[in-house]
Length: 177
Image (cartoon, rainbow, N blue to C red; front, side, top):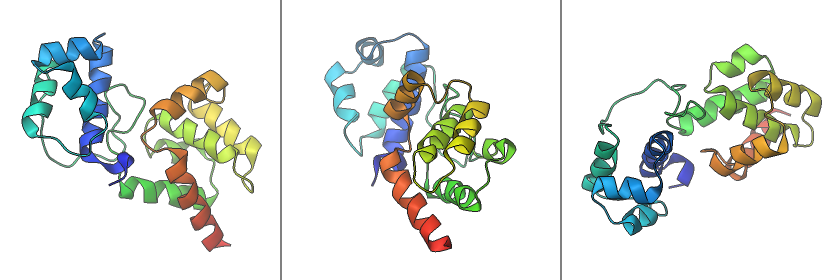
């Protein structure tokens, strides 16, 4: 399962964001969870783990693990990322890109502004896309999104990496032609 759609990794990203918001290093978070720091490090590269480990990590943060449906655009604890990037969200993003719309309101319906602004910056680099329109969209969604240091942060943390998004986008756009 790709990292962007792996539920364990998505949950770990959400919990990691909460730990960072609390000002905790991985060592502190692991200590408060009663786990060896190495367990947390290994978990970051795995596609599965036992519920007891995730429960310990979430309990240390005062969070509760639960299962259920969430609204698609609900943001991650940091407010920068969607809580879940799944095939349904990917399909909606591709449909929007395929439509050619750079209307800010349509983009805002699909998730947090920082996440979407980064996607717009990525699309600005694709041949055949109107670079200026997508950069303007990115800046209207999240001022500064096209600045190299801001975009570098987006690239480092995005739950939908360009290596996954671009082939889907180009395939959909080519099919429309």
